[in-house]
Image (cartoon, rainbow, N blue to C red; front, side):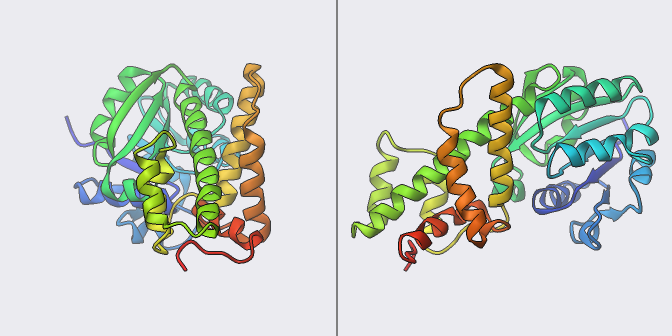
Length: 296
């Protein structure tokens, strides 16, 4: 079988890293991003339009900010729906509303184009290493057909079920990510003000019942002044929490834990950290606590 022609739309923090992984693995990638130079920086051939991507690609990957942008890329004049052709596979690696993803599945299916809602987890570091986890909703056969495309960017790919199930899983996962990050920031700030050795605090937590992704993978770096730049911003984290709240409302499930996470990242947004990595939420809390920094 000939190598699939790959298009990639959205070459920002995550999309650019994933594109570079594909290029380094020997794939030719046609990249499109409204910001000049991003395609070239990621090693992709630059496309002048979405139409060009749709016309010249067999598999099209998306890494976009939210459902409104994804819907525009698919449905607008010159977008993937109008310019695409039967047999293509569109893989949406964004974080999006499951209801929107289900509707896009149906729209593209009417043109015999497969759509996979494929949430990713692992952050910028995993994107650079090619060790992302991908949770996928849609046709199992379509997922199998793009296995070679996903292999350079992911160490774990899980088929979650039908349309929307990949992005539903991603929304649930991202909420736990937000809660653990905000709660750990609060705890570590309290430990700092209490005069505790932060390295020892993390050692104890990571061997105890409070262990979580933030204590294991984020704060060992943050306490040394490394915020792991390049990942999800506070603004996007807030967007993801609100997605979770809306999704749970659709399901009829109470979301009692969302208030604290929304407050923490809302504070970060209001204090100037909106477009900075969400790990900076600990600095926002530190500002309110008297200008405390964990790494001072």
